[in-house]
Image (tube, rainbow over all chains, first blue to last red; front, side, top):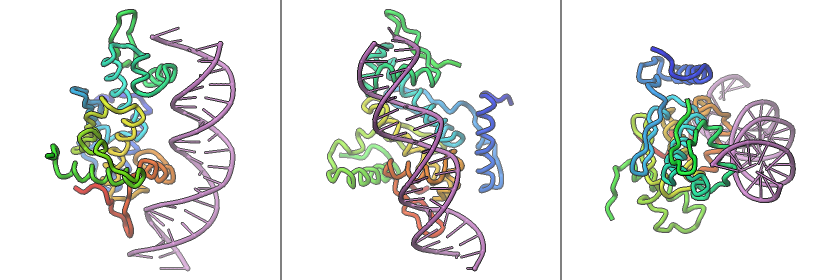
Length: 118
Length: 118
DNA sequence: ATTTGCAGCTATGCAAGTGTAT
DNA sequence: AATACACTTGCATAGCTGCAA
């Protein structure tokens, strides 16, 4: 098996599994992350699988925010201004957040897609 | 009106409605399940429907964090200390967050969560 | 659309304390 | 008494956001 994430994530994950272990005394395969834990969003619905089981609050929250914002940006055809006002934050703040979340907005004049960066 | 989900969802919903009621002193129809967008969590999976379509980032994030934390707390049998170390934050910080999110932990003696049940 | 500096608010870690149950 | 948690609070600092440019 090849670890899909970076070192920091591996470290965090291991620590959490160990904590679990202290309670279950046995670490099973199911407790290991099978994927990033990011589900797809369809029909205004967001699904985060695995994230609950293997991610810290901060990580899970970031996964959620990515999904949420990507969904909204797509909903507004890549228009950041409209997206910002809809999600209730300043354009500049949204820009900074997208940047910190690693969301790339391939928008230009008629552009309308936003995707994950990795 | 017919409840569209399962029993657990209903329970979670009611709990949240009550929590909100304690702060708003008035429970309105809009605060009812049909549009809270809170899904249930099973098999380490969280589903937030509607939240994407009708809530601001902050609101959606809070809904997510509630689900996430309730799930984790239940996973650890209501033990806040273990939950805190697992989700990667200080016990005190977790307490404050739970309070701000309106999550009630009717715990006493050994501890067993009061929100969800398996 | 995107970035940045700045001020104010929020969240969190750390430490210390209180209360309860085993 | 001793241990283990739950819960709270003061404080300093790190992070996030609005506003203006």
